[in-house]
Length: 348
Image (cartoon, rainbow, N blue to C red; front, side):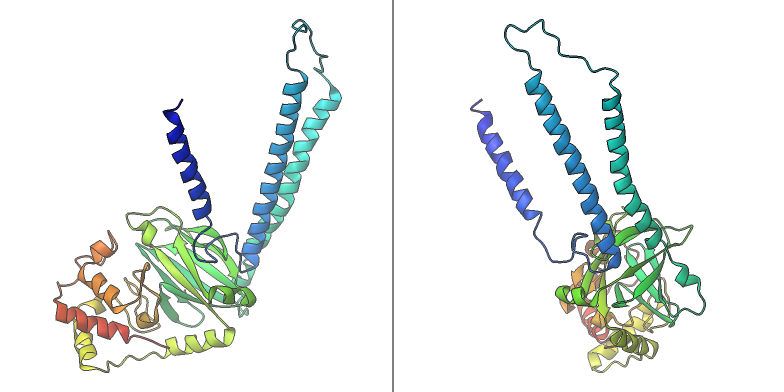
């Protein structure tokens, strides 16, 4: 017994540490910190179902303890048999009706919310001014197209607040799953069909997260699945319209000599896969606003050092990505020039 005691102490310590660390991290990374109507509904369903389950566990535990104590075997009563209630209509009706009521409590709001959240009829209305975003998941990056505006970007999703944003979701290679935890539940992106849904961001709450949210792939899709992230930037409708206009008219002119050298390198290799205009889709991420993006390769802070690290060895930066081996090996001076050019690709 004494030998086991230290192990139990260590286990208890790690359990307590895990409990506290589970609450650490940046705000608005959880479904329990909603920033819009969809997430509000889903959180309410989580709380309702949790409350029902806790109620059932508590009631069953109380009944169990009561039965164990009341009908335990006592000295001198070994032969005593408690009153039998087999075939009691009252008990049978009770334990049949109560689960039905609990299921109704869960089913009614769940079905109601499901139909409400699945309502994307506005997307089919040709006269509608609703914002539609076509999302295409690739290995291992995200492409966002705004068909109503002729704008294409990747990795950073721009959306206006206080209005419904409708999404068409599909995949170009294998199954992925589109998920912005604080905005709404995940939905698969498939290669053989298009899934549709909508989200909404509340302008009063997005400010608490500095208008920047994290999205992820929630479907195991390959070696770099955990690195397949994207960012969501929430802005006012006026700011969104300004960003759209800039993307529609983006023109990049290399300013410094180093950037001009990088532009030449880009034109000789990178341009075959990457677009740098705001209205072109490509086989690799559109780089029209690369310099103003939050992250490099979806998971590292966008700094010159990280961009250089990515160009130097893409495979080490994001395993199994399609960029590995797709361009000639660059020396350090060429990498510096390309980093300078990429940092100037901005529309802000």
